[in-house]
Length: 259
Image (cartoon, rainbow, N blue to C red; front, top):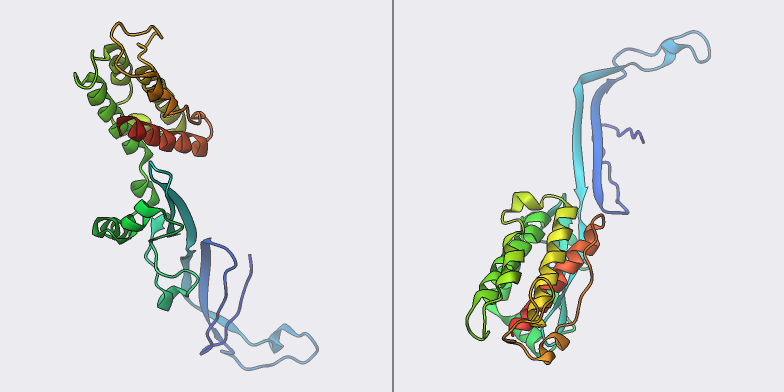
């Protein structure tokens, strides 16, 4: 723990070399409240007195962490979402306040494809960017909500009479057995297990298989369906990053399937 003394009237400045939370304690003193004295070298009486004023003040300074998220369309066009996170909350930055390196964030930048360029200019995309400001990362990237939404959409899709020749009841049953509220997806192992089961149901559905792996009596997808939506990464019980990547890929695979 470093101690820094700052004379009255002076301003203490420091440049932080990394993002994070910095905790400080500050104490004000009255120095030289009594006259110098002492009759020999290093006599304690020769030191100016220091009298504490009030009590210590504790405070924390948060230095923003830059983050990037890759955005990719079904056609493969890609762009980058840039954010600055301050104490787990996404904060807006501007060149005037935060420097040209930070720039304006949240923002989307290239390279783009044709669809990416259109998305960059779309008013709805810009509105969604502005909506990220002052939102926690957990709320903005709510993996549990994505899983629950994906589960609900797949149940509806599997149960549809068209374009399927028959309802996919056994795979629907697999999905119905999964958690239906966010509170049941509170830890990474629960998220990973739900992701694995959703992935299995999607694979069975695209291959015209029921939950036990048997071929449906009335196939409703061609062999090209699954070939166009290959298997993705597996969720890991103790690796939150792997689980999140698997869920993102599940979302991509399902979006490509219904497209």
